[in-house]
Length: 119
Image (tube, rainbow, N blue to C red; front, top):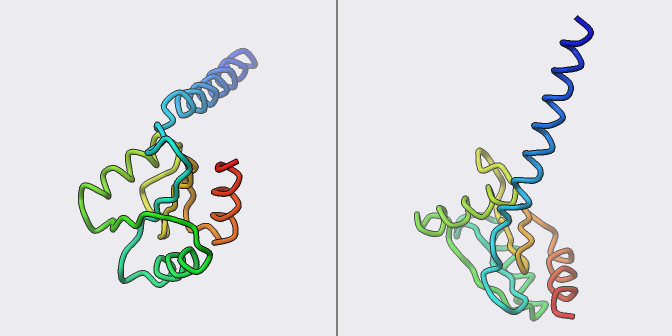
């Protein structure tokens, strides 16, 4: 019985390690060669609209992608899965800052990540 428990623990640990490694190995390629911000959201989402407004006011260049477009949603979901982020249920906006994908980040976090990637 003790050997079976040890075997189960080793298998679980191996699977956990393999899962983490496969996510890192499949991390999506950056969308652009220079620092960037892409905001994925909906026109009807208050959080998305506030993020866009805050980014405009801060002077950070960004691209807005509407997830109601199937192509955009499919691309986002693929990038999220490859980054180890579940696509089952998530809040908007999802923001990609120079290949760092975050769900509903604070604007100051977006700005800091963008500025850090620009230097």
